[in-house]
Length: 402
Ligand code: ATP
Ligand code: MG
Image (tube, rainbow, N blue to C red; front, top):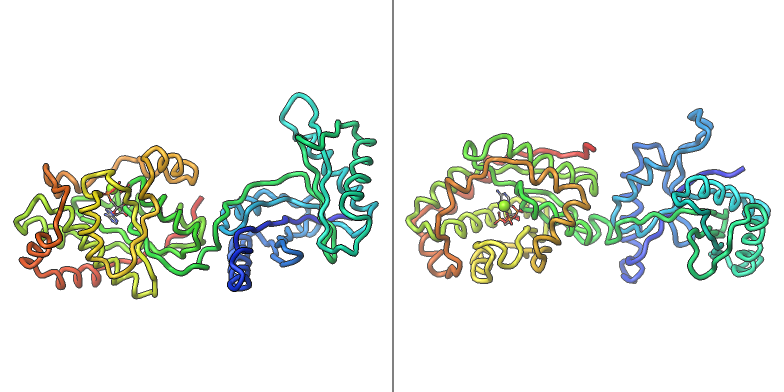
C-alpha cells in the first residue's frame, strides 16, 4: 500500500544559520495557509517538508490528485522544488514496486514519441538504511529496466526516478516541479508597496515578496479623474499578487485634493516630483501604522522623466522609511517578461483612465533640486493635505481570486 504526498524541497534558508529555525517555521506556516483549504496536512521531516494529500479512499477517489496542492505550493516562496511522491515502507520490495508504478505513470504521460531513457537516483537521510544509496539505485534501476525495457542513461536521462529514504518512510517520485525559490513571505519583515495600475509596481511587489517581505499595498486614487474602473483594476492586481501571500490589504488613498493643491502651487515643471513626494509621506505613515520597515516602488532608473537620479533623490527625501526599488536596473522588456510570468501583465495592460493628461505638465523637470521643491512646498499646507489623505483612506482586504 502506498500513500500519496508531495515532497517539498527548500534551499537558500539553509544559508541563514542563526535564523534557520525561524525561517523554516515561517515556511511551514505559509505552506499550511496555502494548502489548508485543500484539506492537505503539512509535516516536517528529513530536511524536506511533506504535504500529505487528503485521503483518497475517504473522498471516494481512486488516487489523490496532487495538482491543486502543487499549484498552491508553487506560489510559496522559500520552496525550491516539489515532487508528488508515493510514500512506502522502508523496504526494498516496496520501494521497487513504487518505482515501477511511478515509471509506468511517467511513460503513460510522456509527451515525446520515443519512450524516455531513465536513471534511478537514491538518497538516504537515514544512513542506517541498507543497501547504501548507489546500490539501492542500481538494484531498483535493474528491476525497472527488466520490467519496462526502458534504456538506461546515467548521464543525460529523460526521466529521473528518485528515491529518498527518510526515518519513517521511503519516498519515490518521477516528477520534479519548480517552485519559486526566494524566502518565506514575512521572514524578512513587512514592506508596503506603492501600487498603481501599471505594469511595473505589481512586479516590484512580487520581487519584494520573493525576498521574504510581507506586503500591504497603497494606491493613490484621483477620483473622478481616475475613475472607479481604475480602482477595480488596482484591486484586481492586488488580488493577483495575494496568491503569493494569501491576502493583501489594499489602501485606497483619496489623492485629488492634494494633487490639485500641488498642481496649482505655481511650478508645473515640478508637479510630478511634488506628487510623488506626497505619496511617499502618506505611504510612510500608513506603513509605520503596521510596523513596516520599507516602501517598495516600481521605479526603474531613467525609465520616465520622474525617474532620473536627481528626481529620485528629491522624491526619496520625503520618505521616512527605506525605499526599495527592485526594478531599478531592469529594462522594460525584462519587467514585461516577469509580469507575464507572474500573471499580472494582462490585467496591467487593460485600458484605464490615467490622471496624467489632467495633472502632468508638458515639460516636466528632469533634474529637480531639493531646495526648489521644498520652496514650492512652503506655499501649501503639506501636513494638512497628508493628514486628509490618511484620514480618508479606505482599506480593502484582497484575497486570491484565481
Ligand atoms: P507603474 O507601471 O508601476 O505605474 P511607471 O513606470 O508607470 O510604473 P510611474 O507611473 O512614474 O512609473 O510610477 C513610478 C512608481 O510610483 C510606480 O511604480 C508606483 O510604485 C508608484 N506610483 C505611481 N503612481 C501611483 C499611484 N497612483 N498609486 C500608488 N503608487 C503609484
Ligand atoms: Mg504608472
